[in-house]
Length: 147
Image 1 (tube, helix red, strand yellow):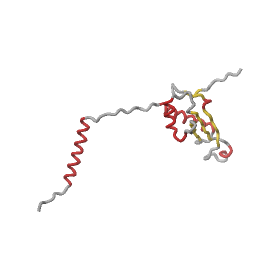
Image 2 (cartoon, one colour):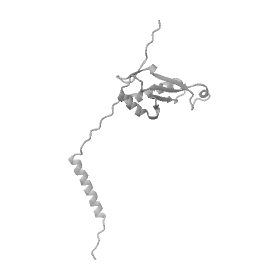
Image 3 (cartoon, one colour):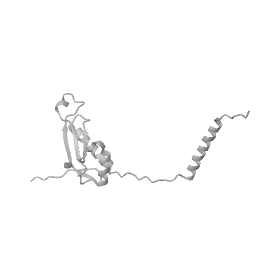
Image 4 (tube, one colour):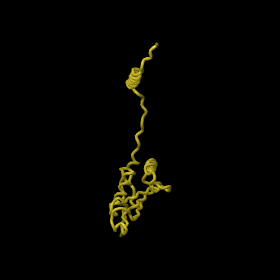
C-alpha cells in the first residue's frame, strides 16, 4: 500500500502552498562550471501559478503581481530563474527561497499613511526662517544714493 502525503511549503502562519503547485524546469546555465556547464542542466526555472493558487488571498495575489513585475506572465505564472550556483540543488533552493521571500513581502499589508497637520510651533519656525532669509538678502543689497 502506497501512501502519498502532500508536501507543504509554509510561507507565513496563514499561507502555505503545496509543492506540486510549483513546476520546475532544469536548463543549461551560462557562467562558471567549466566543461560541466555544457553538459549538465544546473539552472532552474521555477514556475508558480499565482492566479489559480487557492492558498493566496486576493489582496496578496494583487500585491504579488505588482511586486513580480516582469517575472509575471500574462497567464498569471510567476517565473523565477536561478543560475547563481554550480549545482542544481543549490539553484533549486535559491529559486524556492526567492519565491518564499516574494510571497512573504506580498503578504505584508502596507501601512496606511494618515495625513497630519503641521503644528503651530513648526509653522512659526518656518515663518521665522523665511523672515531670517529675507533679512539676509536685504542686507546684501547696495543702498542707492539720491544725488
